[in-house]
Image (cartoon, rainbow over all chains, first blue to last red; front, side, top):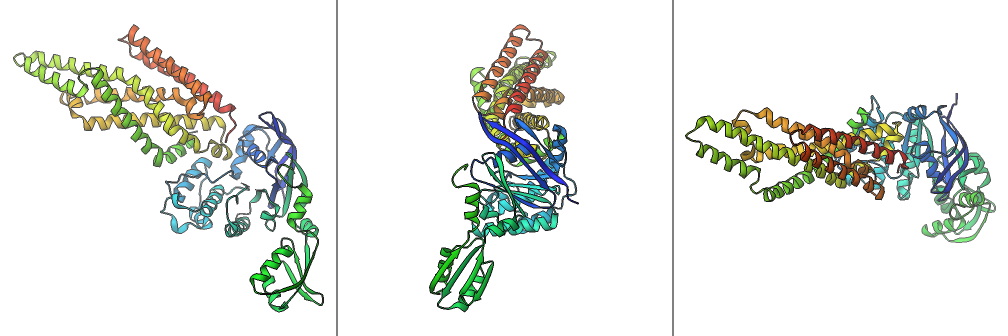
Length: 303
Length: 247
């Protein structure tokens, strides 16, 4: 049975005379992967800092696992794993030593360090200090640290900032593994819908310090599937190449029909050129994820 | 809170203590040099010279040797004793500037997000800072003991090792409370932290100077004064910390 993990009602936070959260209300049910998406300045990080206890709200309230009192919230936070800003660790200690320090802070007992180190992919580096870790390794370590104490809710604030394309794919793969193995509810904060699309089940869109829309992955898929029809010099090879990158590819009498939430006609053209296939005709209709996001949130900062 | 303190000390072991020891010992070396020039003969040379003088001059009067040597060690103790407040105030200041920022960087936010109250986080950080400030001069004093036999050999020769450890114990107590003066600065390296720390520093200097001048035979008054200023400093630090938005 699903239970409410986090519920906020009319949350308002002012910072240096500016209202950063403006009556934010949202609710997270257990077991899902949620994405909190919004442009810079939408109030995403302020919201996360508030539920982490770094900031106090001026108005409204929130509950974690049904708890609302100050002391009750402190206790409830022990069931939450946070990753806010860049990963925190002592560079002159090994990953295992750092995880032990986190376990002491969280008062976590029976921590399976080997399992966490394996998840982070650093099990073979257990004797190396973290100073030489790459950005991707540090990020994976940070998720492992957030998982110390087997949290029921995992909150990640813009985890993929500064990570390259391959690193992002590895990271999302890791998050799916975490969701399957730990069964935690996951809340990922991201600036671009495109970055988190395909991972989350539910998307919460923020603008101007409040929630402006909530959509399921299915709803978004229904709204933003782009249909691209193309004819090429070698349709069979083109279909083979496209199947590697697109969601749905079909060879019909009209040509090759590609259904995708992310690919554009330009990207397909570039992909074909890279494979040495000439495009004779290409047409697209519908909108992709980025266009859908722009239409929902608007472009620019704090739009 | 003790659990957090444990975590803090565990995390500090690798980088902070090593750094603190280096800075502390460097500073201790500077103050010892300073003392050597300001008080004429320094502790070590002074002790050795007087010891030789006493044993030579009173060679024919063995009953006076013991009496004079006792006076000598009392003199050394008093010089060390009265020198301590300077060390206990300035060494933590140096530590505050060097490791305070490091302690703060280890994210008070991380501890709060892990379900710990702000007050317990503050207490753990303060205690950790105090303990580090004790560890530095204590380690320096022990290094000094092994490195400068001329100063301390008298304690051993007269069989009064306990007396030496008593001196170190008092110093540790002083230093622990003295470090609290710099707490506001440790938690906030800006005008607010500095403005809160400096008056406390002057207050403690005034307390020590006043007690030294008015009641030179009552060093326990220095302890009381130090504790009072430490309590005020702790409160000032908490005032700053509790209102601060954690980063």
